[in-house]
Image 1 (cartoon, rainbow, N blue to C red):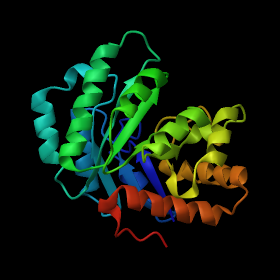
Image 2: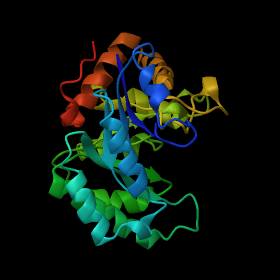
Image 3: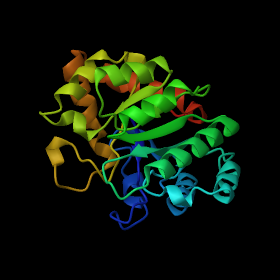
Length: 260
């Protein structure tokens, strides 16, 4: 069975707090879903939905669009929340320079604060990096990740992937991998070691090519699996098995999830 390693199933686009997604997990071949926090409220929602079903897990984090909310008080609250058995990571956080209106210095400060939270909490990290390779690479070179982490919805080059892999991080592939024009990403998918890759949807965002323009769902992680299998010249079953085991290894609080 598959694990969607990054989704936002409590997003208002679904209208039911993720209930219909959870109820169809078995028929959708989903062993587990990681519901990722983007701010304080979505973090609280993620933890709540994780406690509603044994197959759902959560993370605590603030997206780089909201760096001004990363206060000492919030980090103290997140440190407490991170002790929850259903919280498997700190993130998503990082750098996003796609839009000019977001303060880059504030993003860097927020990233460093959450990095320290992850180290203190002894949890892996979930990085969001978009059009910020230079500053992020500089941060990576001076940082260590004893509990590892993942590059969420990776969109960089083989060269950038190598830097991340050398730091012990995993590479997660999402819907963009299914696009015919994602040539550089296709090269990364062939380059990354099998034991260091994850699959995800970022649902309800970043739908695969097969459902472009539609709301994305965790079940669509199967299209990412299929594209990885095609690019690497292996079976879908091999990708499914490897990515599920990789996800459980990275997010170690999920180790008892049955993926058979």
